[in-house]
Length: 154
Image 1 (spheres, helix red, strand yellow):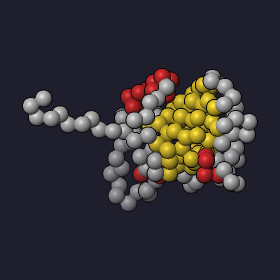
Image 2 (cartoon, helix red, strand yellow; image 1 turned 90 degrees about the horizontal axis):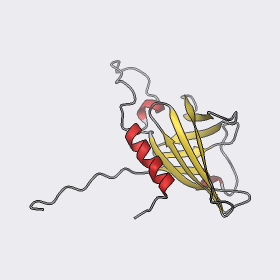
Image 3 (cartoon, one colour; image 1 turned 120 degrees about the vertical axis):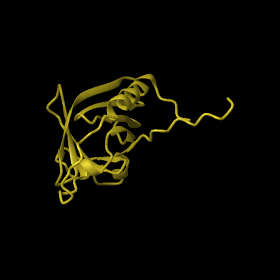
Image 4 (cartoon, one colour; image 1 turned 30 degrees about the vertical axis):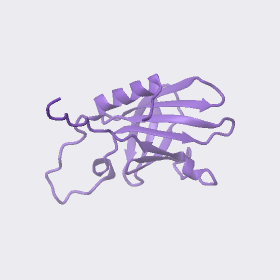
């Protein structure tokens, strides 16, 4: 069983509450284009432990909400116990299957490639990160578990 620290548990709870709303109306045209934004089940909380040049790694939690908002929480493990929280909006780029996070209080955007239950961090130009740590930039979506059925007679 995985124990979440209070801020990460709160983030998961917020996302579960906001992320279950319907995202898009069904397209009545059966010949309409098949888009990643509507075909991939992307809302949710993504976790990872990304590489860091001057610490053990960056504990990362990214919540994508169906309304186009996000919350990003990071902690530089081995350097600081402080958790950094970033909030903002994200936009889709269908041709590249990427999203760009735009924070409320900063001009620095972040790029991610959207996959099935994964987000892969890209460099500041939207290109894949290469090198020996390239696989370390993948965030994985937290699986939501269904409540167990009650046992008869209990």
